[in-house]
Length: 278
Image 1 (cartoon, rainbow, N blue to C red):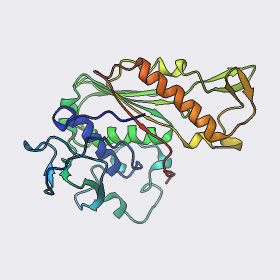
Image 2 (cartoon, one colour):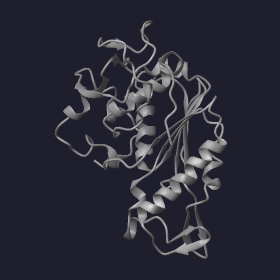
Image 3 (spheres, rainbow, N blue to C red):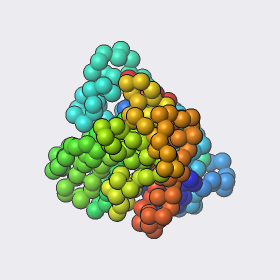
């Protein structure tokens, strides 16, 4: 599935999501694709009047001693198992890098500006613990600059939501490692490669959807999240995991194409990532 593209003036806040990769808690993930900018070699800010397009995919990591944007010790949203500093990691330089596209400059993340631009909107991360990391990190990044704004948090399984009440902004995480549905039949967990309706009903009417899936498809033994796979009306104790992954992602992409209003909702997808446990 291709990424949606947009010009910076209309999608500035989506571009800010790129900064998620700079926080130490996440892998390189929510990078927004914009069309290539070929008008010269000078590095320009995204909002520059003479620049209309910027390819955020092409760039490099550069050291920035003004980072990190937030301290993990000051953000209770981070799960302990992903908190490097809490468990004694001796170095901290890995937190002092930011992503810099080749021919434009990303503005430094500003939580207040983010909330103002996203006022009244909803953001949802859907997937496994990588999506959970991104959800937690975005909340930490925002909270670092608006620490006294009222909020409401609801934790659940599969849905958890953090609301910035003054701005009407909701940032949610929906846990669905396979994206497609898992049902229980006679005490057995059935991974349904052609059924997504149970999960997907929770993804409607969201303004920004960021999906990820990958690692759970190849887990075996105690980490395997299902007992049988159902595909095409047949049940399997196992099958080629990459075939299963492809079928599941086709089901997901068909649902997105048939149910998402692209004039309202921006959709992003990340496949399998490097391991991100600390």
